[in-house]
Image (cartoon, rainbow over all chains, first blue to last red):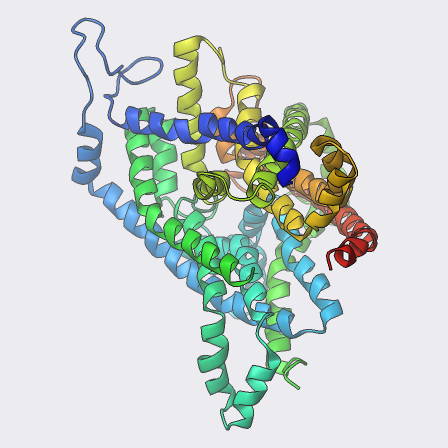
Length: 298
Length: 280
């Protein structure tokens, strides 16, 4: 490509420039606007916020009031913390379920690996909304599980599962499991069987081999998988809305309600800015890990 | 042998696969249930499919969604392929790291943030330059292109990274322009990835509720928005029927893309192998 591009630098600029302009305009710039609106005052108008520069006094109307409000009302702090907690617990549950599956696929006969991987991926191609909705019919008071348990005589009255935090955990694990399994598989399949045999020959039991060889070698995949579940789960809206109860506090739901129900655009923007700030650390961690694994396997 | 699965691992794998597929299977079964109640099996019936097709609101939302998804997928494939070339084939350029982060960031940013930020952009642009005058299919299209491009980039970049550069250089040495070398040598090899990327972008757009809710306007209600408002209140047999049809469609598309990838992969391997030899 060197020769061609030296003579036609404009081709090179187009290849980089077109996606760059699109993403700058429609991805980067909007964040700046969110930041700006989060510093504006709300108003009973369309759109429902005051301009920075007032019409009459030409004075800067920027304010930190929205952020101050986030601090004073405990609802918001509770929603952020609860989102982090739910995302963390669900991520751990995903890891517990995804690890055996990824390990099993990595150790299956090579011709089976592609088929098993496809079986993991296919559910994530079907509608996310539909997959979350499916659990409403399973967990409900008259749902599949309760009907089965009642019929078996194991319970006298339905166990309340839908509209609880439990249902939210189930939904997150179900929806995000493929994102955990794929990076885990990618690292586990690279582990040399000879390493494990050598460890066993040297007297290590299966538990020791797992803890001291497999886990350290899979650390990169574990981190990547956990971030792929944890980061989107924090801002999740559909799952807590459909499966969670009225008291299931998650920040994605709060943002949605502030925006659509209360029409508090500046406050919703402030919620988004703080959420993005919270996500910076895990996003950086994920990016760092990706760059390292790419350098490692080049 | 370390290969070969222990019984415990086998059981765990089967359990997880049951967990993955049982909910979807139940939806399919209940879509053929005569009764409105989930718990009662009142006999086999295709009644809900009939009601689904007679539901004007859902059908027009489906039509909106299909149009938005095909336009968004096509644009995302173009942008995503350009971005993938920039990331894998152009060598180092200033700001390459930042460019890579910018391209893949939409993958992980929560949808509520992406949706809110795009809406605020459209409102600000409307005030400032009068375009877009109102929100509708156009704004949903822009929003979907923006987040689907990231997915296409990842899929195409993975394929491009395997592509043997020597083939492209050989075409240049033989006098082809960079564009022609790309169209006739690179494109056929990465075509399956473009197809897979298009399908992925299409399903992502067809499925999106959150970003569409923020960026859509009157007259541009997408299918997930209608489905969401109807299931919010509880289980609906019509939605079960719709889910079954969507799953059948996705299964067909998955089988098709798998078959394409396999067929093209063997053809691609045959084409690429002489290139590997010429490298010596």
